[in-house]
Length: 197
Ligand SMILES: CC(C)(COP(=O)(O)OP(=O)(O)OC[C@H]1O[C@@H](n2cnc3c(N)ncnc32)[C@H](O)[C@@H]1OP(=O)(O)O)[C@@H](O)C(=O)NCCC(=O)NCCS
Image (cartoon, rainbow, N blue to C red; front, side, top):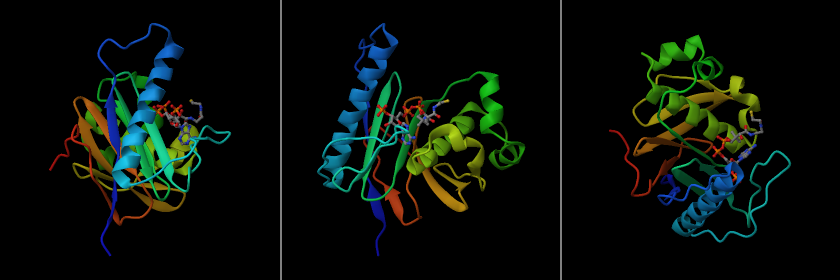
C-alpha cells in the first residue's frame, strides 16, 4: 500500500497587517490559520464543517476530518487529515535561556549534538506537533522526548509509550513540523517550504 500524503498549507501574514492590540493580532493570526486550513482541505479533498474545539482548546474532528493549526506574527499553518494530526511552526531565533531546560534534557542534548537554535526549534516544534496531535498541549511536555538522533528532516520522539514520527520543512527563517501517528505517511509540502536533503 502506498504512503498517505499529508497536505499542510501556509499563509503569510500580509506586510503591515500588525494590529497594535495583542488580542487583535492573535485574532488575525487565527483567521489566517483558518485560511491555510481551507487550502489544506482543498488539497486533500476534504469538506470541513464547523470548526469546534474541546474544553482544552483542542480541535474536534469536523465532518470526520481531523485538523490542526499553528500561527505566529509572520506565518499561519493549517493541516487537515483523515486521522489525528498535529502541526507547529516557530521562527528560528535565540530564545530566553530559561526556556531551554524544560524542552531539552541532557539525554536529548546527546542525541541532538552541538547546541544551536535551529536544532532546538526543530525539537520544540516536533514536541508541539506531537502534543497537539494528542490534544494535550504543553501539559505533557516533559513526557515527550527525542528518541533518536535526527536526520535533516525527520525526528523520532517518544510519547505515551509509542514512537512518534515528525517531519520538518523550512519557510524563510521558520521551521514547520508535522506529526501523524504511524510511519506510513509523507508530506506534500506547500511551495513556500524547503526540505533539507
Ligand atoms: C496547544 C499549545 C501547545 C499551542 O501553542 P502556541 O505556541 O501557543 O500556539 P500555536 O500557534 O502553536 O497553536 C495555536 C493553535 O493550537 C490549537 N490548540 C490549542 N490547544 C490545543 C490542544 N490542547 N491540542 C491541540 N491543539 C490545540 C488551536 O487550534 C490554536 O489555534 P486557534 O486558537 O487559532 O484555534 C499551547 O497553547 C498549550 O499547551 N495549550 C494547552 C493549555 C495550556 O497548557 N495552557 C497554558 C500554556 S503554558
